[in-house]
Length: 608
Image 1 (cartoon, rainbow, N blue to C red):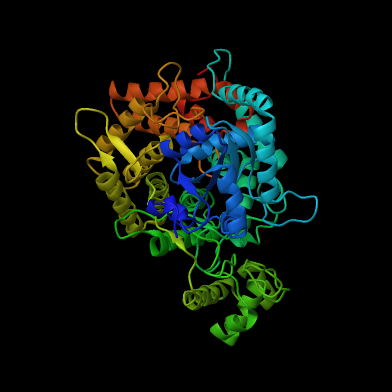
Image 2: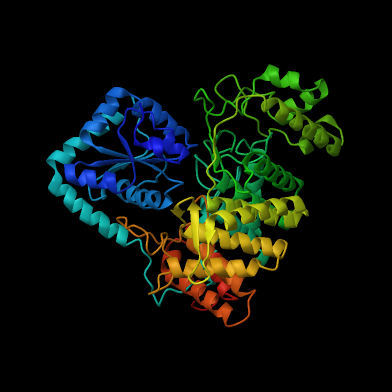
């Protein structure tokens, strides 16, 4: 027996199609039903590669008794956050306002029939020690609150709507972005910096690519030695840690420890596209062989495992294997690894990857990281470093062949326009640094896929972009695509690059720009209304759409003659101006917008 999700195209929604929960996709049918029955909505948001989404599905959504409680008391809606990032972004923001804490996935959020949330959380366990909330206990409590405290919920709804409205940036003529704001951003990052392991904050540790990109630019353009040291140490530690797949290349989502050793094992295309570009920039700045290896292996992973025949790139690889065990595809036991290598390779690689130390994953397995670099081993063994590194490279190739015999983690094959564009930018910038025409060709194939399959232009109105078949694109899709076209043009100019870049820019201005004060909304002007219309410059795992749009529009304007250039430059400056007060309040969280401000005004010494 299947539920309504069986007709959907999303891999994530299809994963829930055979559960006993009476799931609805987001849409008019479910929202109208909630209003007619006066039932609260249980909105569950996740994505196909999400480990804890799978755990909650197994513990609760697949359980018939739990499903019965859900079906009786709620209208249940399931959303793929990659398919509908607008819904996810709005309700993640609402969750943070309700709980005063960070969001994540799965997002479990309870809404009034009008779509306003009144209680939220992320993963709720099916069973828990006494005194801790289980999902069943949350369902019971929410039902009680809904039936007995409606007046209080109405007041909370009003307060939440006001709080959401307050997140929209307001133009402030007195808010000036000046050089001290750059210093403040650097100081904020320095205060959170881990001087031993790199990165920012405690576990779980995320890469923060936008912030690292900001520091690299500070190092390159301003000679900022502190920014350089923070960025390069972090990039080295991530590359040597278990956050990076030492055998197959590519980065996992984040590290569960401060030393980057054990990751959350999903691999996301968006993360790797941004990090590929970042390591290419670091290679340009520092020229370190480690950075070159990361660039080469990450690009190879993307082309080997993620690029579809059409040229687009798949969204993600799951953290779990077919048995639901997280990370087991990537982990090793000692004896199989020893048998895959020659005695000499084993002697060197056991020391290199930490196999001489105690198992670091689930008691009896190793997840590989660089415990001792080739340079350290060369000193210990009194051997030249270059042959040792060549031996490690050969061993890595052998282990990749051996590992590929295992049952692979599931791949979410959706081809997201914005994420494909991010990988295209990464490949283009990496190709320019490493002189790899094959990477450029792969990026061109991806761009051709977007232009052929996702872009519509009748020559009379602004073009229309899709993020997925039948799904209108969002701001990020347009901004990342414009950035990708320009990156390819910089690396390998083609006659119609700038014409297409202008078409994308015109569509972005026509369909997303706030015509009153500047900046860009996340969803199109004609998109179905949600409880809040998002407009943010905050950088997250991917850079902000507004910051990227401003940077890309400025880059485009520099390649065009007046008067075409003036239109795009003005839009970029208006975007920076309307976010100025927001950026000043927390510059380290808006580093893409800061970079746009620097580019918009040479010297960065007067109001924008």
